[in-house]
Length: 127
Image (tube, rainbow, N blue to C red; front, side, top):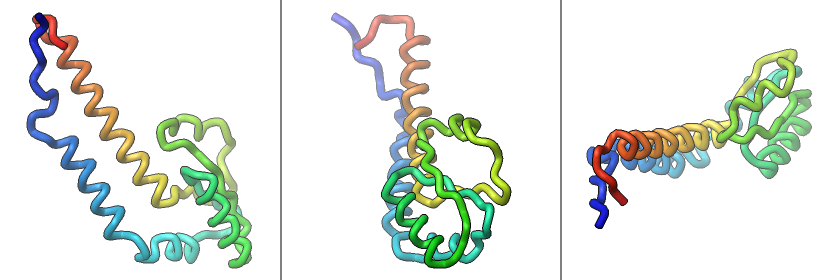
């Protein structure tokens, strides 16, 4: 019978970080983060977003504000895909939902990496 490994992160740091991101998301809703970004956005800037819905919403907001910015979908789990486009004429910005997803994805990856290291480094066969 295989012995069960103890929790890879017995301190709960990964779960705590995930929870903090979720709490932040809820408390930061309707605080004007998108409005603030739109006030600083200039022609030639590029904004990276995580979803098609967010892209459409920002494209509409830019049009209403008379800003000629490019709104681009970029999967937060594949940030290396950013190199598939040439640099923009202005600043490259990341919409807040994209940043939140990027952080969460990386926390989850770190948790999985710790678990994989634990399994690899354990001398006994575990389940």
